Image (cartoon, rainbow, N blue to C red; front, side, top):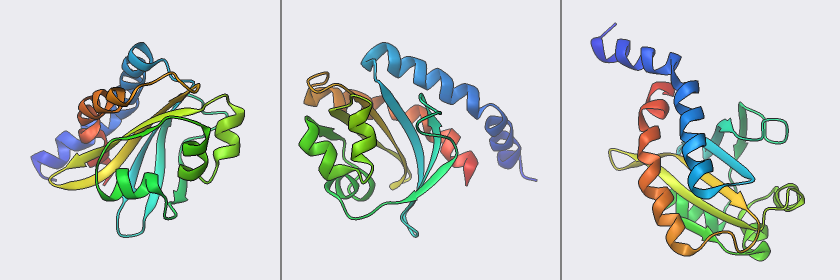
Length: 155
């Protein structure tokens, strides 16, 4: 085992604590009703949820294939932050929009987690309509780099 693999293995054992700490930071900044973190495999277009602040509604781990949506094109393929400002945007972005809306979430911020020019995951924070402004998506984008080691350890 190389030194790098040892480091990544140690980080993986602590990834739950890292994800929890990231969740707490996002809670203090964005106060989301729902927050998810997922790894993304660009070859299979498969997202694997690795953390959720509502594990009863959005359990971990869970996998889903992403269909073609504006959200996927923006976040997963272009690596750009996404801001869904209302219920209509949520409906267009997520196949499980009814579940999201039932939780009272009508706004969403999402940011890609990037490494070495590749998108390796994403974070989404959701709350009531009007809870966020477009510049909040840029703020989330700056925060997600902290999760790169967690996602690299999962590969």
